Length: 506
Image 1 (spheres, rainbow, N blue to C red):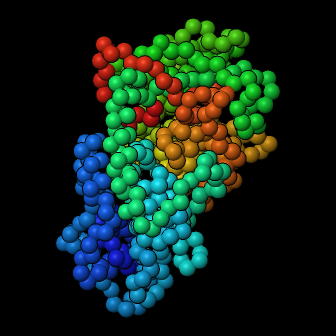
Image 2: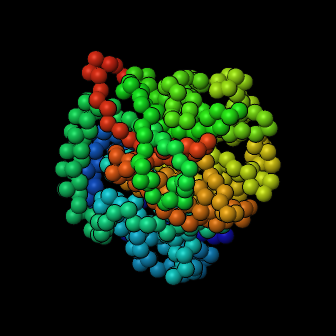
């Protein structure tokens, strides 16, 4: 196929070069780029803001949004009239090039100004590729750095490249309809209107963050639990009237990612145990009795790198765990030899990926593994990949449509999936307003070799029955249900803390 890429009135930017490089790797694709006769001026007005954010946060301003020289283009420029099978238009559709045309839209409007305006308004935009009125692909790119436009735009542009390459390769990405969490600010195609305000907010936000981090541990998560003999959160779709009881910590560490398992008649809860002084996560466990925890979580599993999300399950008379260790670039399977400890590595399930929160389930004799993947750039939480295998030990085969979903609101796993009345329900993280901000419950409507789809049943946030700012995961076993979210804990001014791994999930 012959594809012509046109960027409209925008200057050539570094993300265009990344897109060209990725498209050039598609077998059988003949790529060219149509550039304006003269280099357009950069009218985004973002340079000052990026300088301020770069100084405040120690970031380099040469992001994917930065302009690039024409000499950096590695494919032919221009194509004779009628020679392209498909035109990929990243501008407003004003460039006259004959042939089929895909245009890129952010919240329904074409052009980079719409994308920037949505981000300045604090909203993760819906991005769509369209051919006329027909939807080709859609996604909601995201970020873990929502208060810093320089970093946010870098993440979003990186994932735009993922979406476009997937669409050109034959993928037809879609996103589920979401309940509205809160009133959203309307975007404007003139982003300059919000830049001065954003510069002021950047300075104030940085100052407040410095004060907060000087006085409090950030982040500090907490686990909530409840005993139940009626409907669970999957059925309630709201917080229980009883609220939740906190799993206490001593303030020098936090507990997150609760995974309970009933083994030999006893309920054991595994958690990420993050010690603030070391900036590293390990896996700890505590037994639960009829009235709650019997003591405090004690370390049961540690590695040189950060560990979290201890996905624990029983199979073939053994207890297994797939902890998150995305900094290692692989997904490993471990077996308990002295439960709840004695973990030994049994297999590497997937190699060469930065995968977050690997979650598996068996369905109709086939095993499926879900995880969000950061493919060289972008957020950790918005691109869902699938693998399948005849056995949970592998071998695991990547889905031919990976990524099967790009959605900061519903891609990242948030706990075990459950089967109810023949339907597969999946807890997901809604990170539109920040990492682990809310918990979604999705109903999977397609899971096969052809693709993946899900509907969002509900979105739960923190509130009076779960005070705090975040709601992050959901699991249950043995008549107990567990969630986690954020808390505020004062920092000991005499304690010294090592920096945490930037890829840590919690």
